[in-house]
Image 1: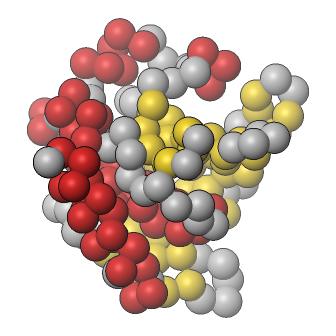
Image 2: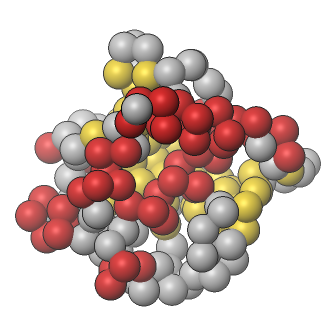
Length: 163
């Protein structure tokens, strides 16, 4: 039953993907369907390096939010890792076999104390986001999914860290 719910949510998210706008300056936008409202994702000047390689970095900006949130993409041989990071928390979305979802941060990406970081995340929502989709998608489509699901991960008392 839990898997069916996740698949239905993922399907609903992908059905709404064509309504997202992508304008000529490579900015992605859409509605997060959360209390943070609309979002934009744009290429960032920020550098994030892992093992001497620079990652592609994007800025995720919510309509109702002031803190910068960055999404770094590490293109591996078989998979892509999406590192979502702010001043107060960090998480990782990753492809696993034929699925894409949240996972615990790999040590090579960690910058915050893992114990403190995990205290800020809702464990039930973390479990629900283990599989967001089981179909391969573009980086842009996956960032849209992250923008919609990411705010739900934070415990209520830490959501204010975004605004």
